[in-house]
Image (tube, rainbow, N blue to C red):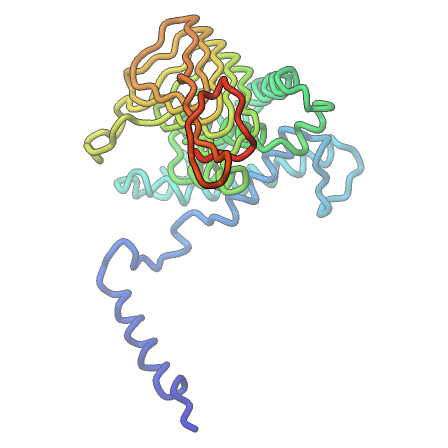
Length: 317
């Protein structure tokens, strides 16, 4: 019996290698000149340990004291992050050709980021408190730090956002998309989020790049803070496309708030499944009129009843 693969594979591989030479964006082969996703995720894991030094043990280090251990972790992160930033910077500015200029800028950014870590940690502490106060199911703040996907997503966002503000390309998005894959929460690193932010249940939350969120805001699963339309494509870059959420707003599950001109006023409450494209005055409560449900009484006839009425267990939405 002929070995078809052995007879033909070499030729097929040659065709694929030739396909790499057409100078498309997907043909780039300079892997050492681009940020390494695995390294960035490793850096992120270490940064989370720096934020919560007493919660996540690193088996690779001997722990003589927490301070000694964290010093080693921080030195490791500084070295690795500086290296990845230096690789990433030319992705944003092709004219940045001088290796010396790139190296100096990468070190400046790395140092500025480390100086911001105490501020980032102060925000995350308030996020932990907000989650504990907002969720009666939480038994302790330690439980939240260990296990709540919403807090993890917020923590990663605050770290990625700082790098985004410092002008680092690619790396913040790798971080945010890693959190997205782990938690189901998609927060663009460009979004601005105030103190004491709480995402309950987390899954399915989307927060766009130009979103502005105030302080003491609570949102539930399935909430979208998105753009009203992206048909303008690249012409919309750097324009305000996503809503502004003022302080002390609560947004319940499944709500969609869209548009760069949409402002949800202080203290407003947005009910579940609401679809909002216009601004809402402070203190307003928005709710969707109860839908009618079809239900099956005898399995041979569908009828409609109001949600307020008494309905059997079986219904079709």
